[in-house]
Image (cartoon, rainbow, N blue to C red; front, side, top):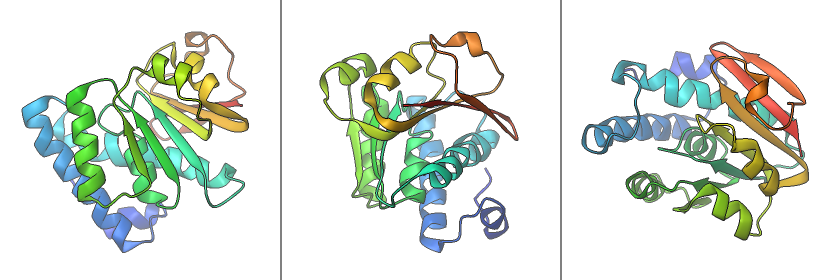
Length: 197
């Protein structure tokens, strides 16, 4: 399994050595836990790209679009923390909430919160639809990937009026969601779909 090297960090604008250490620890632990609990389905040798690189697409767009240093981010259907965990590690002053209904995945996320000392991270072991309906919280950014067509419906209930919704997909299918995206950003290995709040 690859580690996030200093040269890769420079390429993706990760300048903080503490962030680099935490990203590597997170990936290492995720691969280890996956052998017991099946937390992800991609090949282990692709873990670095799937977990870190693709999550950094979100980080880059959030940094570009954030209007204040302190922002709130919600990851709908976080799974094993992709992209929310990488967002929290990379932008530690942000408040990040990870919504994950699977108990084993939520337990992994809680362990990482404490092991990596991520004080601004919250893990909600809940169904995304129920969380969106009853939480009462709204966020500057709502993010997701590999969630499906209902993603936009839940995200729209969680985003501020001036917020942004970002969703990663490998291939472009605008018909997947109820509302047409406001823009589509081409990434190296896929697309970031964006809606304004």
